[in-house]
View (cartoon, rainbow, N blue to C red):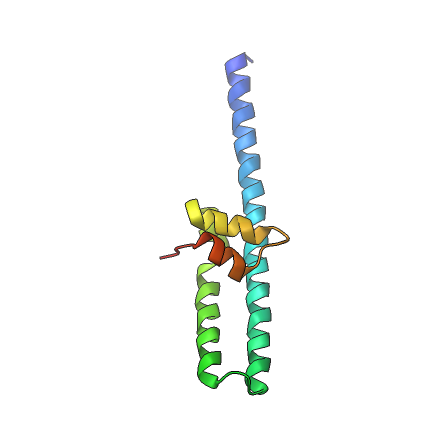
Length: 110
């Protein structure tokens, strides 16, 4: 095996390894974002039951999180670039929160 063939094999291996790492990052980011949205929705539900927000406010929050859950997918993460990728990277950190990461990176899933 010559040096060029070996270099191609190494680059291919590193590329596949990086893609596997990004896939794992995406899975964590999406899972974390869905868990956070579920928590926020639970708090909103308690606020509704306690009379702190109206049904209309709750419905607005509920709709927003349902739509975000449909767009925050592993497939979207895997193909993301720019602000969308930064958003998912933020979510994958232990400090990532769907609201904070969204405000910081302003993803555009349209």
